[in-house]
Image 1 (cartoon, protein in one colour):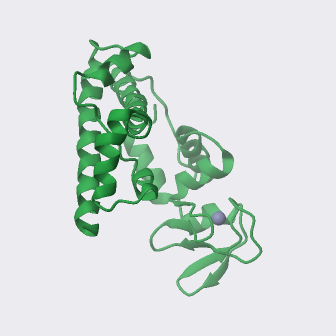
Image 2 (cartoon, helix red, strand yellow):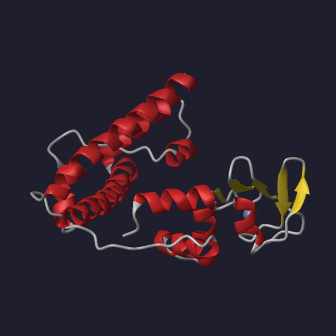
Length: 209
Ligand code: ZN
């Protein structure tokens, strides 16, 4: 595990234009730099680097981010590996230390939260598009409120069945554990996700109604 202070130091030291220049030939254009995007095939440069903002952005394929993300994408490596590479470039020493049990637990919880969240996301969408109840109640409601199908898919709107807690049953069937602490996280995050979906739905509905 890399200490927070070291990560902050790497982030504040790494200059995006220098990091990108190791891979891409950049020309100056106004306050920015521009070059051929390394993430998609192009003949005219739409890959822009902003030294003042510390970010890169490609107007062709949408790739964007800070220095660490650039290294992760171009080297196809992990966050930690990208930090190590930048540390080496800028002569910043990285002493890694073992995670404490508490930190390990926190990381495990966080990871399982993402996994369950993604599962719930897909599951709610499946309920909307592939079940009779979802189509009859959820989908017809969205359409009635003027939401196009591509918008419903884009915002990943879903449907939660009226009765019981079938999501919990589906999670259990998939082997997720219901009683350990990760599940407490996940229950909260699943309902947060659902609230977000509802909010997005309502915002879009009121904007189009
Ligand atoms: Zn691109």
